[in-house]
Image (tube, rainbow over the protein chains, first blue to last red):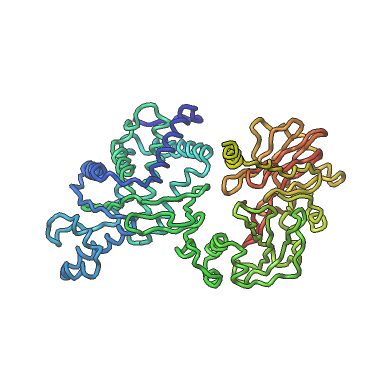
Length: 407
Length: 152
């Protein structure tokens, strides 16, 4: 029985269902609730039973990083049979939490982790679907229909769909271990989410038919765990984070703490989506620390966090030429500084301006804007900032000096 | 008893002066609000270029139109005043230029008819009143590693 996808744009009711499904997936991705462990274990065992893989050992970890570490230690424990348990646990205390969850069996009989198992899962699902419904009829219309729906989802939600991929991407940076195929897990999860969105939106019948039930089983697992690393005999599962902060553009961001943190304390500190060291967010960096950083994006985040005023003061930057009165902002001046040579990739100068109105706490907000290194005076800098070379209406310092009001 | 009542009245209901904020001036020249600048399109400069764009400028819909969304969620909005028309530039409007900056920063054309006042509002920066004339609203640009638009 071949599946034919409707060759048309989604109807409003389908779009509504799409919206609901996307909303559900987004909330699930960002959830900080504890996982329902019995339900998750039940889902995993059902999936394994369907694939005739036998009952797996399930090991829970507090975070993906802890899970990867546990997998490494488990492999060492299971393969190096001549090193005593006591020696290993004394050297690596984290092994204890893994050993507690293993059933009583000889070390030699412990199942080993196999890197390609998840690939087997994915191709099995595709093959099953293909065998039942005909591969060609599934693949191309599916991709066409889902890409259409995906495009609609993106246009409806903007960057919200990217939360899922951005979140998973951040997880990669965090759980960096080339030995374990978490990349494949993610593609599978994303494929699964895609499939569920497409299927439950486009088809009016329940999505268990005509798709194989295995797709359901996978979805149940993904919805109940945070991340997982399945192997033939053993499954490592990570629990959800305790802290998950996003900014208005749905990037990981937190000004006073970790942006993504797990219950064992491991976490990512992030500034508007850029992973940064903890001390940057806590404000303990000096200008020397900033200039010493190799990553230009991290340098930019540090400046944003601390402010140009702080930087000029701490780094003792000298102004270029005299300050000029700020047009349209009576009583305030604009000043041009030379930024340190290795702050950005090209030499830039800094225009520092002060707000006309005071903030609620009585201070005036000062901010800095970077301009090219060939700018000579503050007024020229201000005019460059408001110039657009693609537009017929030019801006230069003569015109800018006539600014009547700035609020 | 009377003396005590008088004291209570003075304490409980102190006289407060009403706060008078300076009136916002209506400006037809160059003015700026936050990281937007409103540039008057003077009489003779390249009038032929914008005739088509001005013709496409339409009345602002009720509810206002967002000119620019700031990073912390505060938008610059144009209020739906009759006699004020707005045309947002499309990406192919100045495609005839031989080279384009990475982020074209000019947002669109604002036309304010005689007798009306355009209102560009912002929660933090306060409103700007724009007198009759034709204007262009532009963002700020910044040079970091490449030229890009400033986010408020």
